[in-house]
Image 1 (cartoon, rainbow, N blue to C red):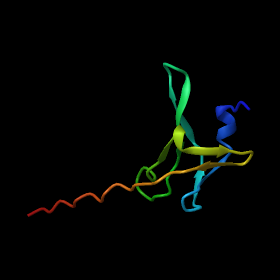
Image 2: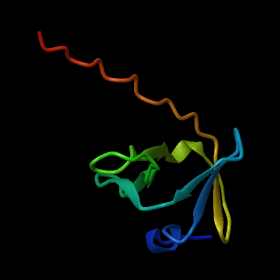
Image 3: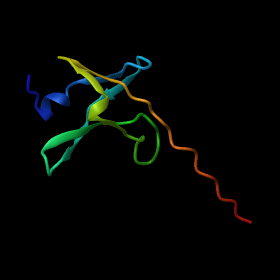
Image 4: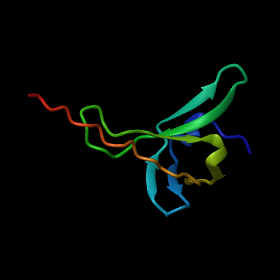
Length: 88
């Protein structure tokens, strides 16, 4: 069953590892050489100047695309905290 990129934007992404709702698909990454979607992008929920860190979920981690949701098997690895600079 074919699916358009615009149809993906209306779907909520749920991680099957922990049942967490990651949010709605905001963008996709496409390999322009072969014309295939390689990842979906879901905005993160952090509070920083430019928003949270996005979840970039490889296409291989998508388990099922349903009418309303997309099930993914995704292990989110947060970045290590930045070391604070000390001014002497």
